[in-house]
Length: 422
Image 1 (cartoon, helix red, strand yellow):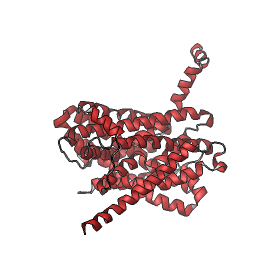
Image 2: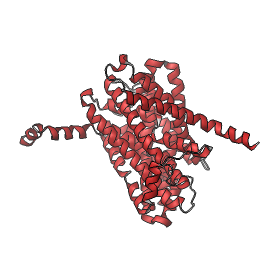
Image 3: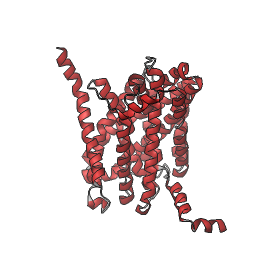
Image 4: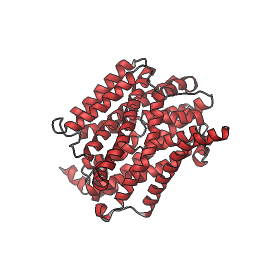
């Protein structure tokens, strides 16, 4: 009792304890960015373009932080999920069209996560016909039989494990001067492959489904507006960790694969290819990170999809609810998992095409989600006095416009190339 009284009399210590109790949604949402699709995209970016695309991570960090802060604030103020707010303010038809595209992208993304499980375990000699079903069963049990508090602790542990990519990058002995130049010297080319890669990085760093999960996670923790400053720090730490891990994946592949002209198609290839240049341990650490990220995201991604679909159409949703309390939620979660597993176990499935283009589809859908969010977060009827400031609006609208322009360029560039060839 004496210790409890001393803690209560120490405001700084109380703040730390309270922050640790709130810690979770921002870090988990940020860390899930670095999933199998993200790791593949970053690995291919490093292998093909070296350090040249590191600059994309700086604006991605700013945008990710601003967007997730908006999500957290909307969730705290309204007590409603993003999907619920979109349906209320834009109607069922628009909600259905948005979610149709998102569900397709999320099935592709979930398949990519299980491809990551298969690839990472393949490095250790485990067949995908064993690793993928076992991982899927483990994920299903965690979600269906667990509760939010237990799941969150496991997710935070997974987030910490992703820092293993720093070890792989350091062991690759990169040219740190070129790393610095890659961050501060932006380069832009108009060819289709380069644009697709930039869009892929943006799409995997700031994925549409994350916004729905973030807001739902804040609501599940029942956070109040008085605790906003703690949530903000949670978001900042999560975004910073996301970008750091992404940067070190690009650096590891740039320092080994790019300089030796090694081409790869997926993250597993990167793990295997690292061995001759950075050592077997670096290769195994890379594969371990891929496995952790894949299982982590194979849990969160279909969970987020089930959350926002059920929210949008008025069904019960939440890990803390039993199957008979939220049958639609658990049925959709299970269905997405099952489809993804079947895709991965099919012989000769086009995994790299699914991986890259699901990330590109994320980037194409993101402007729609962002526009909906920005319009709602600036609506005083919804947010009261907690609307966006000028900086948040500038970043939000600028990101939306840039993504629309880049998506259009991605579609138009093949046509322009064909005209010039004639």
